[in-house]
Image (tube, rainbow, N blue to C red; front, side, top):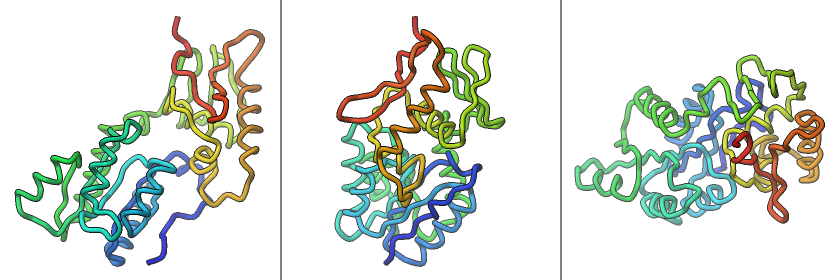
Length: 247
């Protein structure tokens, strides 16, 4: 089955929509899931093998995974177990899909770290409600209208940024970049990860473009002796300083 992905051309409303990875090898069910999740406003990627899912999860962890139990390559149960063993994916919301309805199997799925368990066939509206509930619980910053760190305030609804009360004028890309950094303070992102998450997977641009836009963002944010909120991590990438604004 071909890989199903959203178009890299994203509108403003979807720029920071939560990203969901669907791992399902039944083509008709995968199409149904992708269609309904995109209709809910999510950015969706689909793979149909467990080993392919592991590659995508290592490259750019999504905000939530919908994971089939039985998969070619690596089973969904084993993927879930491995995700829970990694620091960067330990708290990632996971919904397990399976045709197994016995109580013992549900217990097994939850015991390896799945947050929720849905038996096929299932109600699509109910699954969408579970997705929304898990995202709200796990990542409240993704639904917050404002992000604040130190004297920097980012308002998602008005698309405005202020520092110490003064207006910061940012282009659309710099706004998305700052928003992405502020969602995950302290986490180091490679240039490839930033290209994937901020520009889109299929964007045909060089990784040096990230350096240019980080430079523009810094220039807009910093005056005189103000502290730089963005750390350059040599040999790795960039991070929003988690100590920014602390005394």
